[in-house]
Amino acid sequence: MPFRMLDYRVRVYRRFPQKLMRQVVIYLQRTNSPLVQQNTFKLEKTSHEFEVIRLWEQPTEEFLRVSGLLPFAVLSQTNDPAQVLTQVSQIAEQIADRRVQSNLIAASSILAGLVLETNVIQRIIRSDIMQESTMYQEILRQGKEQGRAEGRAEGLTEGRAEGLTEGRAEALRQVAILLLRMGMSLEQISQTTELTVEQIQALQQSQQQDNQNN
Image (tube, rainbow, N blue to C red; front, side, top):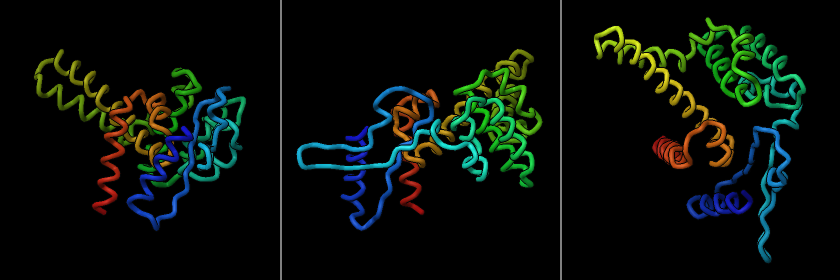
């Protein structure tokens, strides 16, 4: 990771020498690996530093104060992630914008899967709000389209199953994009989302192209 961060910084400097850059590596899951403690690359007289955030060491309250950080609260410094997810759900339910609300809850449930069993998440998260999220709606849309194309009862079932797969993949891609923006390594994103490093690199290139066009 240290060498990769130096490499990223040099690449940006080569293209945009005047641009300031703050590098942050965010680790999601608790680990005793010494790698998550590294924040410096040194080689002879070359030295490069970057910031490291280990979510499990961060106060839960910091994530509960900002709606955009709610999905990460369950991974923060807590001995009771189920209780934190309950708090996240309660806070999210107070958000007036239903689209924002449902998408935050959907993202929270995905990241909660890193530390909680599915049945625990399903017990805490309201299914009706989940169903309003763009992720869930994409799953339904894909399933219905495939079902209509088959034109048979079994075709409808198969279409929904395929739609679930495609919808979940799209949800994971959106999470990957968010984590890329936060500066997480490709390997960490791959472990979190189950996407391959190559798929994440393609997303990264697509985002960079979009930023240049804008």
